[in-house]
Image 1 (cartoon, rainbow, N blue to C red):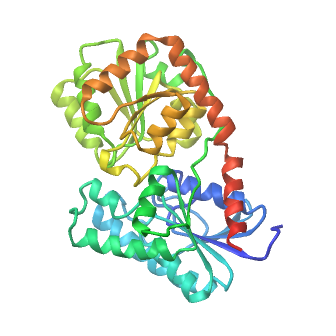
Image 2 (image 1 turned 135 degrees about the vertical axis):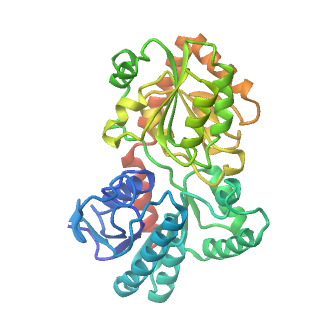
Image 3 (image 1 turned 180 degrees about the vertical axis):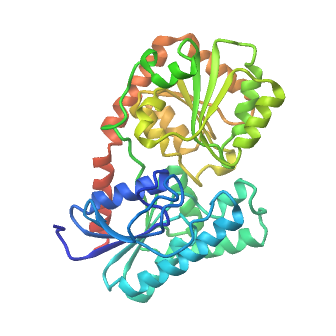
Length: 408
């Protein structure tokens, strides 16, 4: 039984049984807090990895009361349909929250969909509740960086004004890294003191280091004798995929190095077209794998790439960084040097940092990694130790409990 009658309400479109990043971490945080608090989640029916599965409208799972609000679950990869999903979810969730949230409760919203933080703030304002935002993406910066809206245009300015007020008026803003904290504080302006860094965690109980020679995925793909460079996760607008493909092309005649992409996203079709058009034989793309298989596919490489376009710095932090560390996988951070991922790689000495400017630098980093097995092994060991000692789920959930206590 929860230790307090104070309710915590999570507003997140995605939740269990969906498994993608936002759903997975929201589920983990909610279930972690449910051991000491009354936790409720207002979400939609599954729309991502579990889309189409049959789920109860209301259920209790791992002490968390889940209420799946009425709304559409159309294909989110089609923008018009995605907007309909957001609209129907937002209306249904806002009404449900307005009816059920009580004075003194805590409302926690993530940035999926972008309307959730505004709903949370409005509900908190109307009901006398505490409002906490967990930023996984910072708007409008992420939209500008990915070319979805024009910089300094009307949408950029409107989003900017709205988010400045939203961040400034929220009781607490949780960000995933130092670059995101700097961006949020810049958005708030002078006197910003309500921003806290709480990172994503490493699944150290599930993801463990294992031998490449014994990796079933690499055996299936016939890549056990190659130096494998993986890129795992979203192949979307925020990732520097085009830059990586320049390196793939530069290395196409080196039959000892192979690139393995695992995941999906808006750039996947472009990637497949480029592979066919250029006749690239040194790259393999496979679809998104079940989270239950992550220990296997995270170990299916010698080194892994994490890439973000320069303009995305501060607007998002890839959560898979920490599970790669748990797998003792060295990392090449294809990002700006002031990004959270780059800072982490440098501080823990677990890989290379290559800004997405000149692909020859990425090629050189890959060749350096291949040339020194002992150095690569030491980097992987340091990554694993850091994941276990600094980024376990228990440590991260404790930080959320401290945050809740702070907001009393």
